[in-house]
Image (cartoon, rainbow over all chains, first blue to last red; front, side, top):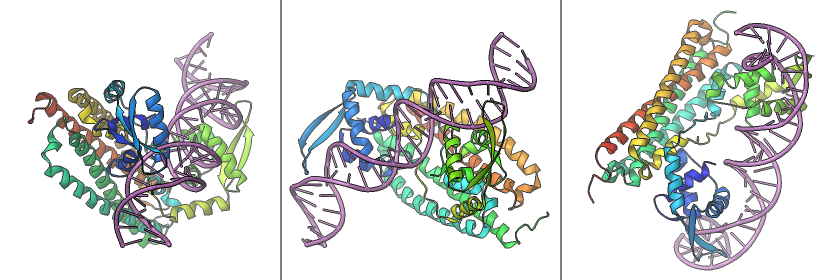
Length: 190
Length: 190
DNA sequence: TGTTGCATGTAAGGGGTTACATGATTGA
DNA sequence: TCAATCATGTAACCCCTTACATGCAACA
């Protein structure tokens, strides 16, 4: 139940609606956590039932009320507990690395193009992230550990360094595959 | 249904039992894909029903037969198709980065220790991976694109570079948090 | 008039983890 | 005798994605 912690983390900054939370989990936050609105709305209701949240209702644009959720004391305590608790790292699932693992079963030149594409995509995303970084660094709040921008900056840098490593690896793999593709298959010995 | 592709990738090297596959998905392969036996056995049965696999049965140690699965022609074709198909990268979920994001809601010095621990753990795992790397590099097959060791090497290097970037980031975060912890909270202005 | 944004909800189904269940052989 | 390794299977439950469903306001 880590979605719960993600929502506590986001609501720790300020009260928000499910709609806002959904959009934040598609923006920069999506670099390390994602969720659909269909998951978020029921979870917010469950968290309120558990006493972690309360909401203010206002007439909404559609047929239903607009609900702005805020942390309760218990919610804030739960957030602090989670931040202090040990983190178990569960292994990421990366389909592209899996393909690299099975490289000997595929066509080297086709796969090389594949990895080049992925590297290219990675570079494009890095440019976007560099823009975000510049924005944050222009604001001195990103060095103040009591401001949310501090955490934003830390996690953005994770995104940038991870993306950098990923892109570099893709290029390296592509090179190895291209070398393999130019010398005829099975060209070593047999 | 990517578990299916992972199993195709592993069986592409040689025929194996569900038990062997389970253990490989806990060793080096776990760096980029994992699965439990409770997931694997039914999937192998489903793949056989779909004509991708066949099995040889032998008397097993327990009450049931031991089944060694091998790719059929269709299985091998499916593996090649997958390798040539575009990969959609789905965002990884990283709880530690989420905690960094929420850093302003926590105690800097407690969190700093947390990130130091994680960096330490990362370094220990890197040592293990370096051992694996040395083993592979001692075997010249790791440069031959027709040998499974070629793919093993590619994916192992992904694990190493990713782990390196992760550990470095953890250390960097810890430093920032330690600086914050030494100067009294809210020490900028107000 | 048609699309985008705001705003909330439910349902179906796939994927994954944890736990239950069985039983022989080997080594401490 | 007790634990670990080999070996396969099922059941319950949680998490997540995709799709269905509603309806107002603003803008092109």
